[in-house]
Amino acid sequence: MHPTPASAGVTRIAAKVYVVFMLSFPAAAFGTNCYVVATGAGEECLVIDPGIGVIDTLRQVFDDHRLRPAAVLLTHGHMDHVFSVTPVCRGGGAAYLPAFIHTDDRYRLTDPVSLLDPQLKAMFVQQFGSRGWTEPDDVRTLTDGQSISVAGVDLAVLHAPGHTEGSVMFGVDAVADGVPEGLDRTMFTGDVVFAGSIGRTDLSGGSDRAMQRSLRDVVLPLSDSTLLLPGHGPATTMQRERATNPYLRGLS
Image (cartoon, rainbow, N blue to C red; front, top):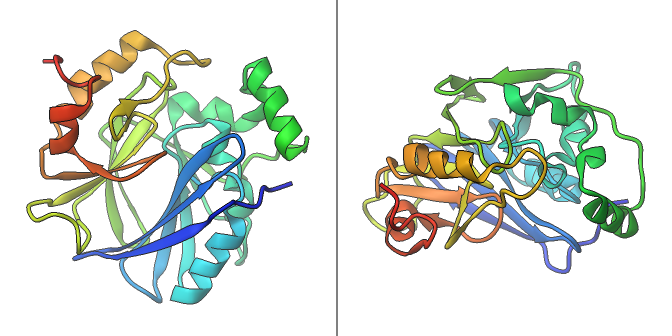
């Protein structure tokens, strides 16, 4: 049973190269950003991190902008980011859409609810009810440094473990109109780095040591001209996080 968001919003950002639709909604237990990326209206699109309760909003976005989903990309395998992956992949057409996830998080798609710690699992079942889980029919694994092209969008895969073993960030060489001048790249960061914070490392598969390496070796090298679109919370920039994020300051 999907939750009804207290306030669900769809923000359309007309990009210089791509059109990025950002969907954000608060859930009772989790709040996860779902993104839709396409080269323009009337084209194929990809969906990043379809979490809890996004199906109706996604359908509305597809209809409003005549978009045809071509694939789902997952920044990691936590339930709040993959909850709707199978319905999206089975949403229509003659063939099931592929779901992309890093090889180290592939096992999580077998049953992500069962991997929650007991307290979170009990809270989830209380809020959303219990249901059977079916993993996507076509799962394709990613590796660090891989480049993929989906729906005409070229993305770079950056493996950044710490929140989970297979956490990744997806980089696109495009920025949105209306963002501060000087930005020239967009990074979908999942739960690696947020505005003013980073992802938890105390859940199953998390590692503080791995997170510190990822922050130092993967996040810090990003240019200050990178727009960061995280898995939770507002957008930010690498310049801002380098200067103000307490988890990044002091790393070298």
